[in-house]
Image (cartoon, rainbow, N blue to C red):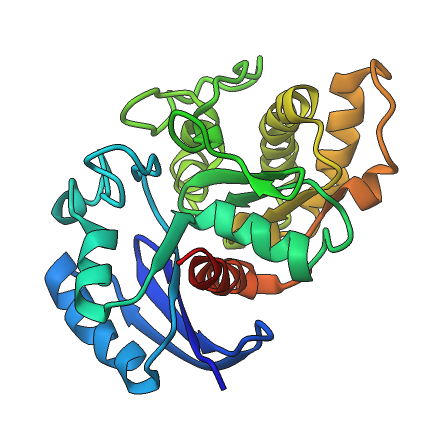
Length: 289
C-alpha cells in the first residue's frame, strides 16, 4: 500500500494525516502551532514512520505559490511573527525527501469539498471560512485558483452598515470584511464571543449583511457553481437563512442564481475539508514528480 501525508497548517494548530491511494485517512496527528523548527521536529517523525510517497500542505498565509519565484514555498508577511519568511516547503522537502505540493488552507478545503464533499460532481466552487479570520479559496474548471499570488478574499472592502460605527480590527485595512465580520470582530463589537450571542438577532443580521455583500462580489466575479461556508462562526446555523436572504436582496434579481439553499451550503466534509484537500494535493505531487 502506498501512503501519503497531509498537513493542514493553521495559526493555532497543525493537523496532520496519513492517507492511502484512495484518499482515505488512516491516522491523524494534531499539535499546537509553535515556532517553526520545534513544530517541524514534532511532525516529521509522524510522516517518517509511514515512509510516505508525497506530502500535501494547506497552509495559513500569505504564502508564495509561484514556482519560479526564489521565495516559493515560503511563508510571507504573516502575522505569525516567528513564521514570517520561513522556508516552510523547502524545509519539509529537505527533511522528508519527498515531493511536496502546497496551497492555502482554504484552497485545500475547496479542493476537498469539490472532490469529496458538498461540491462533488461540479467543476467549480468556493470555500469560505469565517472564524478567527476570514479566508476563501476557489476551484475553477477543476483547477485551484492561483495567479500572481493566491486569493486573499477575506480582505475585500465592504460598505459599512448605517447602524454600525465599529472601526474594524484588521491591522492592515480596518473595516475590510475580516475586520468587520470575523469571530474576534464580533466579540470586540458586542462584548461577548459569538457562541454567547446566539439569541441576539441584531448580531446575526449585521453579520449576514457583511457576508452577503462579499458573496455578491464573489458571485459576480467568479460565478462559482457552489459556495461552501465553514469556520467557527458559520456553526451558527441561524446565519445561513439570513445570509441567503441578504444575498437575494443585494443581487436584486440581476442574475439568475441556483436555489440559494443549494448554492450557499455548509461543508459536506465538516472539519475535514482542509486535510482531505491536502491529501489530494499529496497524490497530485506524486503524479507530477
